[in-house]
Length: 515
Image (spheres, rainbow, N blue to C red):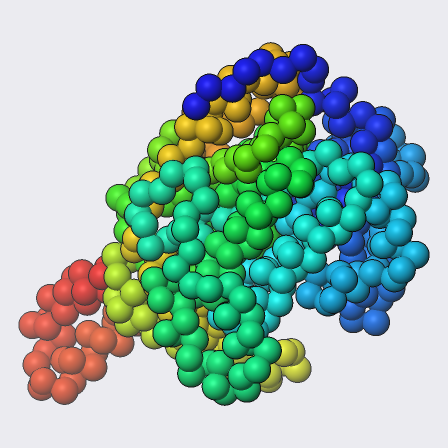
């Protein structure tokens, strides 16, 4: 792909532009907001579409957003009020007709918005088809309708997913043809009962593994249909994980993917993980995704693109990640940055099949969880571990088609976009992850999971390391007790002496190494 050089840079182009963001309180959206505020201080008004929930009005939700530690670096150089002076929250919901906007707010957006970042979506693979159609597909249609009504829209940036064409193990940066009729599907969700729709869902999905991928693919076609009306671009990230460099290495608020497993492993409650150690898993840091959204929108706008461009924001073809790369380091990091709140000695082990994992989980997850939940009940607490592991098991069942499948997403257009940027933009809005070292990155991700997911800062690290040592002693003692109990039980049941059955101990240790 050849891209002609441009005459301006990213910061100067976004200067004074009014931006509308959907999904602004989510993992990606809040990181996008932070990047815009920190790197383009003279940007125009940023409108955040926020949905009132849990009895909280949108202004209360905005105050909660301001407290997120993602803004820590920004607030080193400016006050909260100064940083957010041009951020305006707008009540609405992509799942509602006309985005749930009041007539006054809609007019305000139509008159002022120059850039739309549409990142709102439901990411739940188990969500019903009706809900995903309403949010992922119709939500995109509603945002595009707003774009059509805007008097001075410069660009529409749509966040898709690298997995929207997951029936193909190797994909390019193009919009693939649909195999289903969009209007027919919408009609089905409107006319069928929940039970009828659920029974027909497998047939409707066809080659798609879940309702998420089919509705996100259809949403891409909604964007493509508007390419003659205003510049559009589609960015397809793979599994978005914690920040590589910005604003803080390891920052995350998402519990999906590797960071979620590290969160549970640090507690000592997640001890096994079903993965193909040599399979390429496509992970991409959230700050790279944010950079690509900003850069892709900039390119489409300044070139006045008449054809939607698709960018894979991925790692599989340029810096592939394999769990084997970090297998020897994960537990080192877990004990280098332990939790004071850990409930048992952390040790994460990778297993090659889902069946193997479920068998092992009986002994290392479920039984210990039942015991710890019982103790929690006795001392008046709220037992959650059995429920947690049941949820993990259900999630893994839904993700089974993803866990042991290798995809390769070609990202030639992304690499061309990086080269097209001016040198200062290549630095400030970097898209190239070729220099990312996964071993070093996972150390930052472990620290990030500790601080941002498990809510423990480095002030208690020495106390946490002391507890980690104590938990190790308890862990070794418990293992010794279990081995001795097995030895004694077998000797007693067989009528043989303890000496003659001494081989049971190393045999038990050997067998347990496979659990």
